[in-house]
Image 1 (cartoon, rainbow, N blue to C red):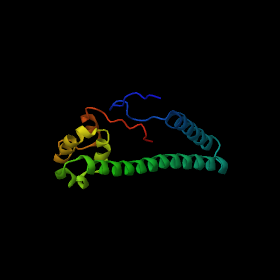
Image 2: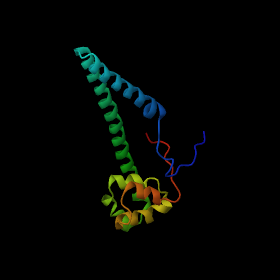
Image 3: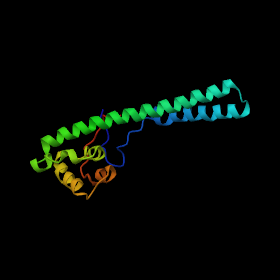
Length: 145
């Protein structure tokens, strides 16, 4: 199956079942349980609210933890790629890149990596968004979570 070319505008991955359906269902449960506690205060309605709040916490942390692991893998992949692709003077400076910068640089093809790396290290561009926007020929990542 052919996937559309990626760029800065369309690279964010949205999973409808998680981002829309799941979020709406949890929001509906939260509103309903708060309404239940207000209209009919009891141990049962309070416990339902606590259960729904627990669901909100667990689902938000599960997403955050998955993204944290993904960021660590990207950091490792990009450091390994930089070891292969960058000239010696930049290889020595790989530890200076933040995880956020490495995540932005992952979309740069090998041909653009040296120039972007120099710009990042010089402070010309610093954050993930600026780095992504500076990429000319986007290196797609269709495997992200």
